[in-house]
Image (cartoon, rainbow, N blue to C red; front, side, top):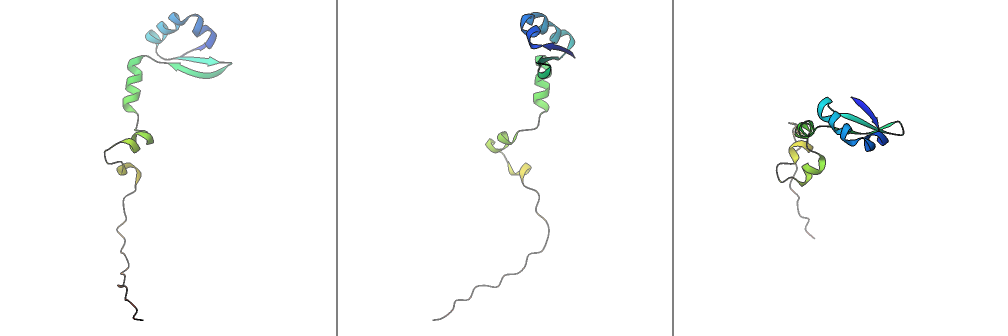
Length: 89
């Protein structure tokens, strides 16, 4: 993966884009720190399809959201409760 300073990526964007399409992802740095990656659209779609649903997507979904969020219930026995008796006054 080639690393491009942001100034070079801006000044030579066509070359930057061609490198992405022919050689794969291209890293952009700002002040020496990694800032972004330009990836071909086919790879982006593959990554999006492989991603797990986010918490926001799970909460907003109308399908069984609790399948992911709630652990299965144990098989332990429950204690027996006696019925409440009313007290006469």
